[in-house]
View 1 (cartoon, rainbow, N blue to C red):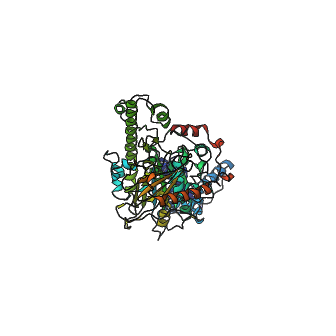
View 2 (cartoon, one colour; view 1 turned 90 degrees about the horizontal axis):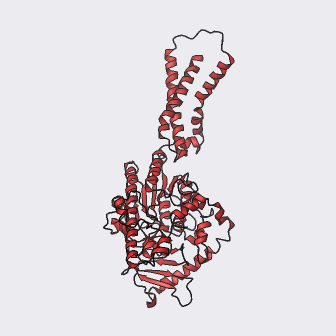
View 3 (cartoon, rainbow, N blue to C red; view 1 turned 60 degrees about the vertical axis):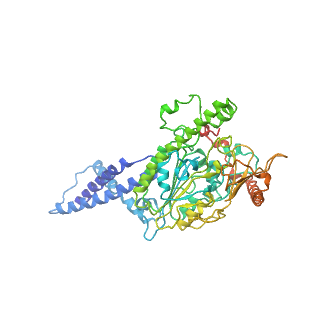
Length: 555
């Protein structure tokens, strides 16, 4: 008996050492929960193998039973032997944990998908402030996005996709809830909302969102995000078993680059053993200020070193400056923005290459989109959050369906980002969330699209808009007497929105519809501040968070 206990101690401790040696080199601080699972899994398997080998060798080498002898061991040696025995048996707890369904140990040992589960993995990739017209897939000739265009060749290209708001918080919050910003607690009825958005607005706990619903349906969920408005304090971590936002409460660097985001997402993909899963990746590039990390010094040297690509710099310094200098500055901003797009495409390509190497890529649902566009002086403005024009509301939308799905290469009718959550839930076989306003994305090109409602300006008196196949109508509910209430643009002949048709009576039915939707939204938004649980106090923000908001031009 003593020989077997000795073999157990030798085998058990050896297995633990071998398991740790195999797992520790792959440790990552990005995902400590999954990394710890990997260590536990490695130790458990190595321990079991080592113990079985040690016991088998002990049995083979035991020719005759040992003759009994009196124990001359002192108390310290007995205590040490007991401690070694306890250490050698410790991994038994990992195996016993498998008997607890849904427990930590069971999740650590789980690999692949359950038998009969054919649901696809779902990957949502959003790129902040990405204009559709900078992708070759949408007509650009600048050659900035070879990787995005390669992906577009495998996907359905939605030519007329629109956001619910022209800036991040309200747009992506509405996407996750599939509700207008006013109906998911991200807007109040005030005329101007900048201060409220900065210090109070958050996704309320009583509004169900996509990752929660997928998690309840058995999906592993993870998010690798940038942008301080997508932080845990704003409600965006709900439903994610693994959540990372370097721009949130624990800020590690100013402006997390795409290289870091792709690296963190890649490490999660390598550690995650569960399928199906939902992974959301959000790149901050190409958000202002435009400072591409790989910009060649000679390119930057073509422009004055004092120039910065910031909203305040344009409106406070350059807007009323010398016309020639102003034109040159606009060229500078457009070029730096294009270089940011080139940079994020490079690191999107690194992530895409890893996704394509997996055996589940073909059967996965993978979406690439943006939260909003960016104005590069199209209507004498800069950045985003201040208007409802085409360059801010239109977003790229590329959907790679699971392999067996029949879908057209292009869909031309109007769709909205509110349609993503219903599409994901249907693909996952998950029940819909209450009060969703979006619809499942069409997979075939058709004659008629949706009417996409947008609201929630960050700067200036609020506006609302409705985008249909034929017209866009913009409503100014806080216009002074004598000022026009509406802007109307014919999207069939004037996609750049140069000719306002409000005086012609065009799109009268959409004006009526937009006024009605605006009043409905205002009624819903009026309840937000009254709900004390929906307040996001200024005191919650740390100085580092405020630094981050300043860094991306919001303060």
